[in-house]
Image 1 (cartoon, rainbow, N blue to C red):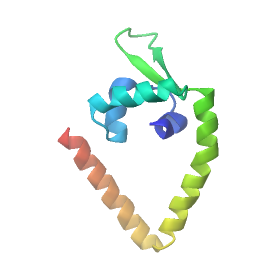
Image 2: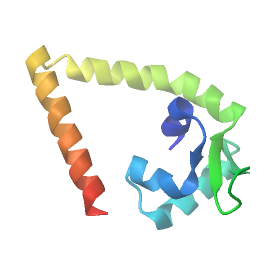
Image 3: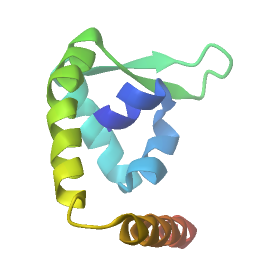
Length: 105
């Protein structure tokens, strides 16, 4: 969830579950925990009072700036085991799985 907020900015809490593949009941729990650690905050939507956004805090940005480059490098190392054609195939298959999972909701 922090990665989503770090890269995509504020997100409606109601839509986060679909993007990070968490059940809606788990989203509230995760948001509460991250908010308790001051890594994100809830913000009311100025245009629609029914919508609440999750926003990464400065502390959350600092944490992500520290850990994300290591995570990104680890992923790059893992994928060095594939040639370009295999990477393209994997990307296509993962997109297909993601779309299928989204349709299952």
